[in-house]
Amino acid sequence: MEAKKRRLLNLNQLGKGFFARFFGFEQGVDITDDVAVLYRRNVVIKNIIFISNIIYTILLFILSVSSEGQVTDWVITIIAFPLTYVINRLLRKLINMDPQDKTKQMVAMYVAGFYIFFSSVLIYARLYRIPHFETGAYILMYYAVVVISLYQERKLLSSSFQGLLALLTAIHLIWTYSLQGLVAGLSFTEFLPVFIRSPEFSDILLRTLLFILFYFVVYAIVSMGQYMQEERKKELIKRRQVQGDFTHIVGDLFSVVFSTSYALMDKKHAYQVQQMSMKLAHFYGLSQTRIDEMNGYAMIHLRYQEIKNMINEMNTFDEQNYDVLKEKTELGSKIAKRMQLAQKCEDIARAQMEDTANEKFLKDMLVIQSEIESQIILLADLYITMRVATPYKRPLAHSTVLKLFQNELGNYFDYNLKERFLKFHDEFLEMYDNF
Image 1 (cartoon, rainbow, N blue to C red):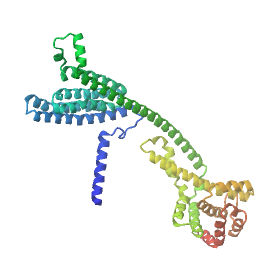
Image 2: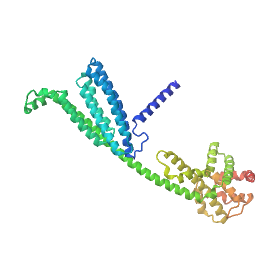
Image 3: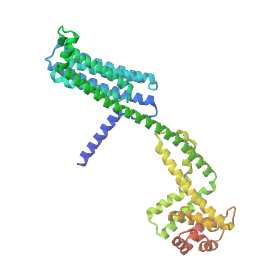
Image 4: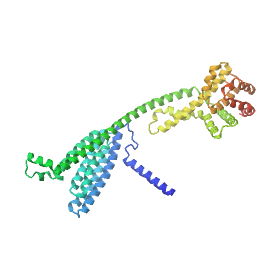
């Protein structure tokens, strides 16, 4: 059962992939590039014309068989296949002549549009006299309008509709109802009242009105689609401009932050902070999942080299690798946040040694990254920082640092976290000595 479902799923995906490749309008197309969009539409319409030509050939073949093999029908059927192949080949050559040339693509569009409605008219003219074929052949007129509407070009649709309406009217008057036979020597003034009262006139009028109504509906859809496409294109252009500006701003910001914070990215110090914070997290009772996440966060600022490429190659990002840009931007945000925590440790240590800490400073520090994982990393970082020599202080003994945590420094941390650290301070001393 599962194997059958997988086969059906694979077939479904294969069908979607096939359709997207040959009939998908946005298959790898930059919608802000009008020429690229027109080229893709030409390719899709060409594929639709190819399928249409096959259907026309099948219709003619059925006609030749059903009409007991009349010579004219067989000749038309035999000629139709190579003729449609040549037309499709010509369209493909015209479309691929220069995909970046808008004029050539416009010419290909009008040639394809002309062929669509002209071939529909020819097929209808060939099949309208056969009772079982007339209705299906007449639907081809509507089919031609729908296919041409896929270009989302109101001018082309309007021109094609006018041509189709004129040809259809001529076909109705000359072929479908043989107007010349109805005249029968009558003058125009004598013939007109007779013709208006005839069922032929009612049928022609009904067909024409329905065709006009159908055109108005399709034209409204095309107008709406064209408007939405233009708005979408404008929005995408604006978004890319904003994205480019934002990316450069973020890149400049990262450059400034990282260039002034190399002292905070010491690998040895970061490793010691990670090991000590992991031990403290176990004592505090964090789950293993949260400890693993905290360990990654404790060392994430050392991945600065991955962000350097984004900063140096900012102009290389486009819509295709937007996910890469997003991923690197998120990484940069986490690195900046981790460095903020390292800077918080540095500020607290300096304020303590220079005796500049006050109540306002304490409140400001408590607001910055108050999550328990951040507090654990900060406590481990602050302990190690107080134990080592820095430009603004000498290294302090474990007992001195312990007294600071019991009094002033303990105010920056969760009470339970501080108590767990003080309770197991001997183990942290041993760990530091082993460093």
